[in-house]
Amino acid sequence: MNLIASSSEVLYSIFQEDFSSLVLLPKIEKLINKEEPTLEDVLNLCSHNHSLLEKLTRRGGFSQGGEDFAKEILFKKGLSFLKSLAIRTMNQEIFQLPQELSGLNELILKKRSVILARFTKHYYDLLNLSADDAYLCGLFFNFSHVSFQKLVQVQFLSGDSFEENQIDCAKWTADAFAEIGFEHVITSFIEDSVQDLFSTSFPLGQALVRIGNHLLINAEESSSSSFRGGTRIDRDLLDATGLTTREIVNVLKDLTRDYKGGTNHQ
Image (tube, rainbow, N blue to C red; front, side, top):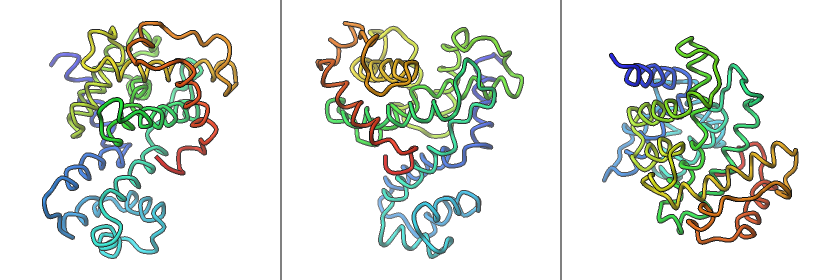
């Protein structure tokens, strides 16, 4: 078995075990696309996982789970509401960094990822993506950090620098996400996150997210949300978006100001 295949399988197993809401998301998407979903379909989504069901019902403001919850979703709230619940629940559990390597911790990564997700979603029309796909592309852009630290935790990788393993981790993460059931637009965006811009399958999206990511990292390092100073943006990236620095910075300022821990909205 080659290293790429085995690493992807290890990550897939870790995600299955640790991130139930992540695994749930493609299942909800598949049900949304089903012509006539049934009550049994909704019940089967997470009835086997009482902990996940409890998180979803609590976050959705429901007093009961099980069949009552499924009926409320299917006949009143809708499956898109359930998907939103799953994403907000997922945001609270998937950014685990057990090793806290390179000074990166869960709170920093979660904040960066959620703001980047909302930033990408803001431009979904420009990107010609659905709002949800744009959000997830931004949310998972830095997820290779999680994969790396999870693999270090189980001693599949040594604790060498993330940068040395970044390309492999992006590939392994994308493959694991594909196995879970995420669509190609999401998995290719993860894999392309470490490639040369013009060799990626979606240069416009990559350029936009890379600019946002760069500005957010600068703000983290300066302990500021002003995005001033030291924020020079690669001209190739900026030209690829057709946007101005001011336009991008103003959007990020608003989203950063509105951030409340990733629980309030997508």
